[in-house]
Image 1 (cartoon, helix red, strand yellow):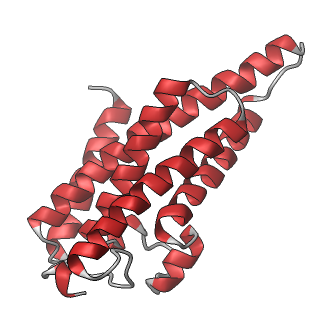
Image 2 (cartoon, rainbow, N blue to C red; image 1 turned 90 degrees about the vertical axis):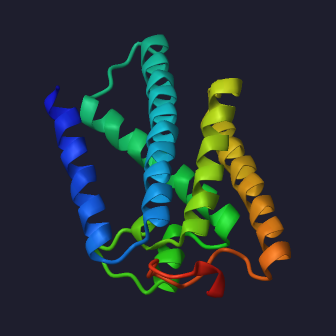
Amino acid sequence: MSYDILKKTKTREKAIKRYYKNAYTQEWIDVRNEATIARKDFISALYSRRKRIFLDHAFYTNTTIDKNELSKKISNDISILTDTMISVWSGWTARQYRQLKNLTNGQDLHDNMTKFELRMLIIAENEAKRLIDLENPSKFDDFLSIVIRSGNFAKSQGEIFKKIYGKYPVTNIIKNGYDELNF
Protein backbone atom coordinates (compact mmCIF):
# COMPACT_ATOMS: atom_id res chain seq x y z
CA MET A 1 0.00 0.00 0.00
CA SER A 2 1.45 3.37 -0.97
CA TYR A 3 2.16 6.05 1.63
CA ASP A 4 -0.49 8.42 0.18
CA ILE A 5 -3.21 5.77 0.28
CA LEU A 6 -2.23 4.77 3.81
CA LYS A 7 -2.23 8.42 4.94
CA LYS A 8 -5.68 9.04 3.40
CA THR A 9 -7.05 5.86 4.97
CA LYS A 10 -5.79 6.86 8.42
CA THR A 11 -7.19 10.38 7.98
CA ARG A 12 -10.59 8.97 7.04
CA GLU A 13 -10.52 6.55 10.00
CA LYS A 14 -9.69 9.44 12.35
CA ALA A 15 -12.58 11.48 10.95
CA ILE A 16 -15.01 8.60 11.42
CA LYS A 17 -13.88 8.15 15.05
CA ARG A 18 -14.38 11.90 15.58
CA TYR A 19 -17.89 11.70 14.09
CA TYR A 20 -18.84 8.86 16.45
CA LYS A 21 -17.32 10.71 19.40
CA ASN A 22 -19.41 13.79 18.51
CA ALA A 23 -22.62 11.72 18.30
CA TYR A 24 -23.15 11.89 14.55
CA THR A 25 -25.61 9.26 13.32
CA GLN A 26 -24.46 6.30 11.23
CA GLU A 27 -26.66 7.57 8.40
CA TRP A 28 -24.94 10.98 8.49
CA ILE A 29 -21.50 9.32 8.52
CA ASP A 30 -22.47 7.22 5.48
CA VAL A 31 -23.66 10.32 3.62
CA ARG A 32 -20.49 12.21 4.61
CA ASN A 33 -18.36 9.37 3.21
CA GLU A 34 -20.39 9.47 0.00
CA ALA A 35 -19.82 13.23 -0.18
CA THR A 36 -16.08 12.73 0.30
CA ILE A 37 -15.98 10.33 -2.66
CA ALA A 38 -18.07 12.67 -4.85
CA ARG A 39 -15.78 15.56 -3.91
CA LYS A 40 -12.64 13.57 -4.71
CA ASP A 41 -14.01 12.53 -8.12
CA PHE A 42 -15.15 16.06 -8.97
CA ILE A 43 -11.87 17.70 -7.91
CA SER A 44 -9.87 15.03 -9.74
CA ALA A 45 -11.81 15.67 -12.96
CA LEU A 46 -11.38 19.43 -12.60
CA TYR A 47 -7.69 19.21 -11.75
CA SER A 48 -6.72 16.88 -14.57
CA ARG A 49 -8.61 18.90 -17.22
CA ARG A 50 -7.30 22.28 -16.02
CA LYS A 51 -3.73 20.97 -15.81
CA ARG A 52 -3.94 19.64 -19.37
CA ILE A 53 -5.23 23.00 -20.61
CA PHE A 54 -2.44 24.98 -18.92
CA LEU A 55 0.22 22.56 -20.18
CA ASP A 56 -1.18 22.60 -23.73
CA HIS A 57 -1.15 26.40 -23.70
CA ALA A 58 2.47 26.41 -22.53
CA PHE A 59 3.44 23.92 -25.23
CA TYR A 60 1.74 25.82 -28.06
CA THR A 61 3.06 29.20 -26.92
CA ASN A 62 6.51 27.73 -26.33
CA THR A 63 6.63 28.89 -22.71
CA THR A 64 7.49 27.06 -19.53
CA ILE A 65 5.34 26.74 -16.47
CA ASP A 66 6.75 26.39 -12.98
CA LYS A 67 5.12 23.42 -11.17
CA ASN A 68 4.31 25.53 -8.11
CA GLU A 69 2.80 28.27 -10.27
CA LEU A 70 0.74 25.68 -12.15
CA SER A 71 -0.58 24.22 -8.88
CA LYS A 72 -1.49 27.70 -7.62
CA LYS A 73 -3.37 28.55 -10.84
CA ILE A 74 -5.28 25.28 -10.80
CA SER A 75 -6.07 25.52 -7.07
CA ASN A 76 -7.34 29.07 -7.57
CA ASP A 77 -9.56 27.94 -10.45
CA ILE A 78 -10.92 25.04 -8.42
CA SER A 79 -11.63 27.35 -5.48
CA ILE A 80 -13.56 29.78 -7.69
CA LEU A 81 -15.50 26.98 -9.39
CA THR A 82 -16.46 25.13 -6.21
CA ASP A 83 -17.47 28.38 -4.50
CA THR A 84 -19.62 29.26 -7.50
CA MET A 85 -21.30 25.86 -7.47
CA ILE A 86 -22.05 26.06 -3.74
CA SER A 87 -23.44 29.59 -4.06
CA VAL A 88 -25.77 28.56 -6.91
CA TRP A 89 -27.44 25.70 -5.03
CA SER A 90 -27.29 27.14 -1.51
CA GLY A 91 -27.67 30.86 -2.14
CA TRP A 92 -24.49 31.47 -0.10
CA THR A 93 -20.80 31.63 -0.94
CA ALA A 94 -18.69 29.20 1.10
CA ARG A 95 -17.60 32.09 3.35
CA GLN A 96 -21.23 33.20 3.89
CA TYR A 97 -22.27 29.59 4.49
CA ARG A 98 -19.56 29.27 7.15
CA GLN A 99 -20.86 32.49 8.76
CA LEU A 100 -24.45 31.19 8.62
CA LYS A 101 -23.33 28.13 10.58
CA ASN A 102 -21.19 30.30 12.88
CA LEU A 103 -18.06 28.24 12.14
CA THR A 104 -14.60 29.27 13.24
CA ASN A 105 -11.32 28.69 11.43
CA GLY A 106 -10.40 25.04 11.52
CA GLN A 107 -14.01 23.86 11.46
CA ASP A 108 -14.83 22.05 8.23
CA LEU A 109 -17.99 23.26 6.50
CA HIS A 110 -18.81 19.80 5.16
CA ASP A 111 -18.44 18.25 8.63
CA ASN A 112 -21.07 20.73 9.81
CA MET A 113 -23.63 20.19 7.08
CA THR A 114 -26.81 18.24 7.64
CA LYS A 115 -27.21 15.03 5.66
CA PHE A 116 -29.61 16.87 3.35
CA GLU A 117 -27.07 19.61 2.65
CA LEU A 118 -24.45 16.95 1.98
CA ARG A 119 -26.81 15.27 -0.46
CA MET A 120 -27.25 18.58 -2.30
CA LEU A 121 -23.47 18.86 -2.50
CA ILE A 122 -23.21 15.28 -3.80
CA ILE A 123 -25.82 15.97 -6.48
CA ALA A 124 -24.02 19.11 -7.66
CA GLU A 125 -20.54 17.58 -7.67
CA ASN A 126 -21.62 14.33 -9.34
CA GLU A 127 -23.46 16.29 -12.03
CA ALA A 128 -20.46 18.57 -12.59
CA LYS A 129 -18.12 15.59 -12.95
CA ARG A 130 -20.53 13.95 -15.38
CA LEU A 131 -20.71 17.12 -17.50
CA ILE A 132 -16.92 17.60 -17.42
CA ASP A 133 -16.46 14.04 -18.68
CA LEU A 134 -19.19 14.47 -21.29
CA GLU A 135 -18.29 17.93 -22.62
CA ASN A 136 -14.50 17.93 -22.14
CA PRO A 137 -14.35 21.71 -21.53
CA SER A 138 -11.34 23.66 -22.74
CA LYS A 139 -11.80 27.17 -21.32
CA PHE A 140 -12.42 28.47 -17.82
CA ASP A 141 -15.79 29.87 -18.94
CA ASP A 142 -16.79 26.36 -20.07
CA PHE A 143 -16.00 25.02 -16.59
CA LEU A 144 -17.90 27.92 -15.04
CA SER A 145 -20.94 27.11 -17.18
CA ILE A 146 -20.78 23.49 -16.05
CA VAL A 147 -20.64 24.30 -12.32
CA ILE A 148 -23.48 26.81 -12.67
CA ARG A 149 -25.65 24.23 -14.45
CA SER A 150 -24.71 21.61 -11.86
CA GLY A 151 -25.52 23.99 -9.02
CA ASN A 152 -28.89 24.76 -10.61
CA PHE A 153 -29.58 21.04 -10.97
CA ALA A 154 -28.92 20.54 -7.25
CA LYS A 155 -30.99 23.64 -6.45
CA SER A 156 -33.96 22.16 -8.35
CA GLN A 157 -33.67 19.06 -6.16
CA GLY A 158 -33.67 21.34 -3.11
CA GLU A 159 -36.88 22.95 -4.34
CA ILE A 160 -38.50 19.49 -4.52
CA PHE A 161 -37.33 18.88 -0.94
CA LYS A 162 -38.90 22.20 0.06
CA LYS A 163 -42.23 21.25 -1.50
CA ILE A 164 -42.26 17.96 0.39
CA TYR A 165 -40.90 19.09 3.79
CA GLY A 166 -41.77 22.79 3.80
CA LYS A 167 -38.17 23.94 4.23
CA TYR A 168 -35.21 24.36 1.90
CA PRO A 169 -32.36 22.06 3.03
CA VAL A 170 -29.81 24.84 3.69
CA THR A 171 -29.77 25.61 7.40
CA ASN A 172 -27.64 27.06 10.16
CA ILE A 173 -27.79 23.73 12.04
CA ILE A 174 -24.38 22.21 12.70
CA LYS A 175 -25.13 19.18 14.92
CA ASN A 176 -26.29 16.02 13.19
CA GLY A 177 -27.22 13.48 15.88
CA TYR A 178 -31.00 13.96 15.69
CA ASP A 179 -33.97 13.97 13.35
CA GLU A 180 -32.95 16.61 10.83
CA LEU A 181 -36.44 17.13 9.46
CA ASN A 182 -37.16 19.17 12.58
CA PHE A 183 -34.62 21.84 11.67
